[in-house]
Image (cartoon, rainbow, N blue to C red; front, side, top):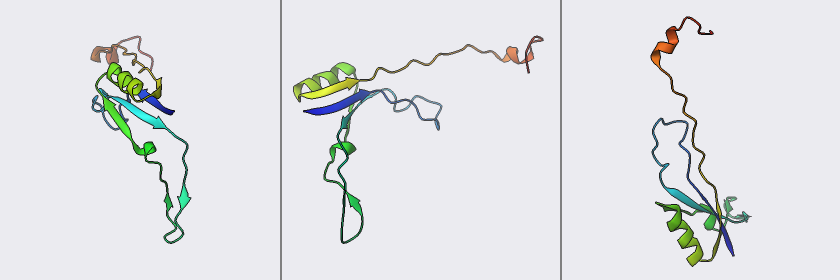
Length: 98
């Protein structure tokens, strides 16, 4: 039976927006099996599931897909960031610690 992980990717540190964080990704678990090509010396693999990532708009769509295709699913819920409200005037407070 195939095993897969369902998660919502976090934003990269190189962006301030929320691009590419709205979709859910289904990524397959499989042991890496590599072989060395004797002619070129390159490392290869016949397992393409490690390179496959499926995108879904909702968790329900992904769960239905996994159930239909008999995929054992591990769902990672996204962590919500804690937003601390800040104002510009706090930079000039008299009790501010530098």
